[in-house]
Image 1 (cartoon, rainbow, N blue to C red):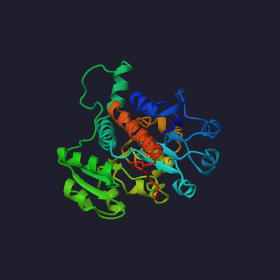
Image 2 (cartoon, rainbow, N blue to C red):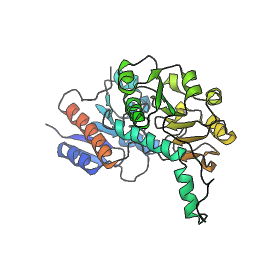
Image 3 (cartoon, protein in one colour):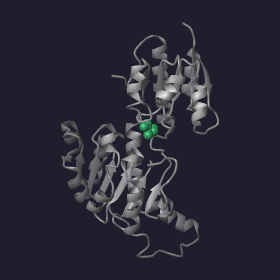
Length: 320
Ligand code: DGY
């Protein structure tokens, strides 16, 4: 079998690169930086496959530059960075890395939820600044989590994993999606409601929907007005699901109480005002960032490339 020539757009865990190298000649972008578009357009030329990241916009122009590429193996479960219809039209396969990051991402949503509710980051900064002079009855009062209502937007794999964990805190689960999901209800006791009802009744709202034209700015000024003043928003899905300027205003005015964010509308830029807010936690898109999970994601992306090279259907091929 002829070895394939593969470009890897950023460094991924070594076991995955080692596996890929057993079968293919590889070049890896080891700068640690997201590729400039002009570099991406140049680097995809003459390859058989590209292992891409969610930070690489793979559109028709890139595909046309990538003559000879048979597969874009995306190192992410989300694939809003790839124009799948254009790939299919050109006979190019596209794959993602579903399943392995489900629980890891759900855990991060909980980590953010607790951190905002109990003001963990804010109070840590306070201690480090030498401001702690002794126990205070009014110091960093937060929100209880147990027995509260959590609203889950998007009842897919990650939403389900997140919601299952709410049981441990005796929480009521509300959820919304395009349709009711019996498996979700059975496993979480969750109740299917409209987005408006979820926003009005939830103490915590966690977003787990993919970014689609229909979910762009799903939450904006009107939606924040519906939420409780004590509510906390968690977003580990995709930034543009939220109108970030409206979110900053809602956090500044106290329309909502806090936000735990891992993703941003204009990533890696932050909307003006966001970084100045004490009631927001702003993590750099790390929800799937555990050693185990990132390694498994790499192994899946690599197995998709190897399958394509052998003339087999990549295990997590996305083309219809
Ligand atoms: C994904 O996979 O889509 C996450 O955003 C990064 O792991």
